[in-house]
Image (cartoon, rainbow over all chains, first blue to last red; front, side, top):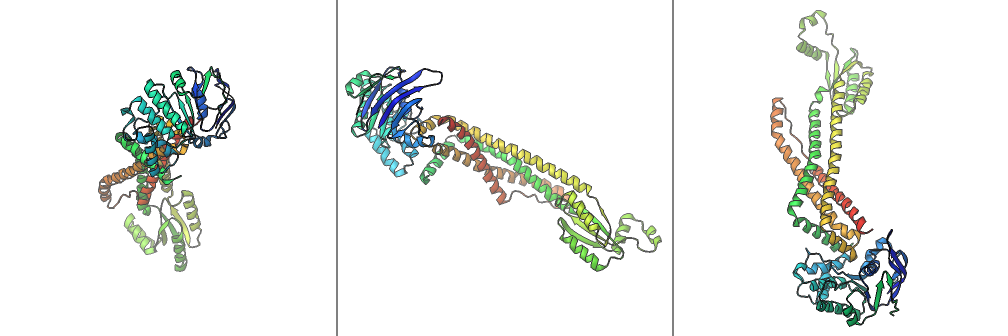
Length: 222
Length: 301
């Protein structure tokens, strides 16, 4: 499903952010991406969401070579993945329902279907009864759940999360990461970037550890 | 693209405008004033041309006929003149009528009597629309008519026609230049307004792009915003011009009465009004498109 082959990322006039990364994550697998701040975790996820281009190497996702993906095909590619951010990236002037519905609206899903799928996604993250509330009335953990609902409402093939528990206490972190594990059990390919070592040990999932842009323990996961 | 996506974008645009009613109203007012100015001037110019049309009896050419010109030749020439472009009337003045007019205007009755016979020739008085032809083509027409075998000589004063046309041409040019400048102003006003809306909704745009929105999906609500404001501004500009015409009609009527005439001002026809609304909608759409296009180039680069 996801395959990095000698992937390097550098910015003009700056050091390499990723150096010859090789990894493979099969369909329905889950891995945790760990490493200190500045190790390249977010950049790796940005390559996967095609927010950044690969400098060298090959990055294949679901049979698509992201290096040669045309700009006009990027939106369709992004609709195949779900992304969860550390800062949730919710629209504060819209209610929870509208925030989650956005993913379906950009995909052109019609109104009645949007209604049922948004409610189902919110039920799944435990916020089914709070559709019409606004994000500012929610706790940090609840806001992150909304972000997760938005990321999974269109049943993506791949779910990516960039430090989804970065601002949460241990109990909430456990809840959130258990949700990701739940999606993985339902067949979604999941890659979660985190530096929470306690959660990494608790989950017992395969770990991809980045140090200074290098994957320290390249693992064949499938 | 599905209809419900467009409806959703339209609702989105409407809600955004209604969320900031004061800003929306100010934008519409600014646009309508910018549009009403050139449209008002075009209307004034149109009315001026109508007024000049009322002066067509001032643009006359006298074709003096040979004494031996028979009634058939005269009738043939008159028919030819009446068919000519820019001619609004041809009047035959026979010798007796010419003498009576001369005596009436000059008062030289005694001097004429000493001549024994009527020395004045019959003539055809050609009344022209002074704006229908250029002075050059008018002069060419006069030259052609004067070469008719029935015509002895032609008398015309085309200098004032040339001056009048030059003034009207200058006015038209000036109004067009102003209209183009103000149309550019309308695009800039709308572009700047949409740019502010984009800045306010930057998060929404970025998140939409992240979850797979296409350029057109993101752009559409902003284009609809420009379109809605353009339509409303165009309608308001139409109203402003109509109100201005109504406001000016009283003084114009009083002035016309002093000159012993009537002069009803003409406003925008329904067709012209709708064209104004359409043009305004286009300018609103164009301003939005330019503003949002620049932003999306950055978002999707």
